[in-house]
Length: 186
Image 1 (cartoon, rainbow, N blue to C red):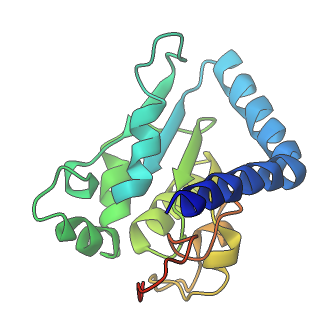
Image 2: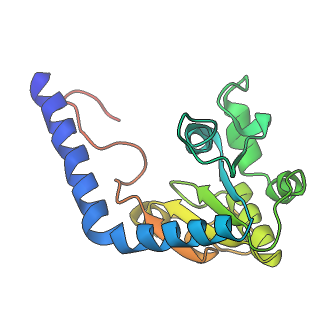
């Protein structure tokens, strides 16, 4: 099994190298966009549903972190919801992201970073489309390999990468698996 753990570590290193090689200019572009928003008295919002919501929690209220970071953390989309499968139902519910967006103070000139690995669920697409309509710059952090192979769960037929101003590809694997283990079907 130790060889599998080393294989996993190497695979993660390869993904990080690929992100640096292919996404670095977009990351800098997003950084500049965020800096300019803050200089102009605007805010940065971060959203993700279920596991993707962990990023919104990670960047918020950190020692040495940026104060104008505003996580969007609707409890029905966070992993402490029980049953946890409820989060899957809510992130697929078209119109829910629009309602969530209404609970924020997001406004023109702000920046919204939306994290969704598949980029297909309605809540993320609602958030992106609603924010753009308000004049907010939308950044998508997604997996383009995965997202380009699935259909949208939104009536617009758009996936997150098709709704954003800037797209950062996490360069990950299709779905959530990356190492195959002997005698496991997953």
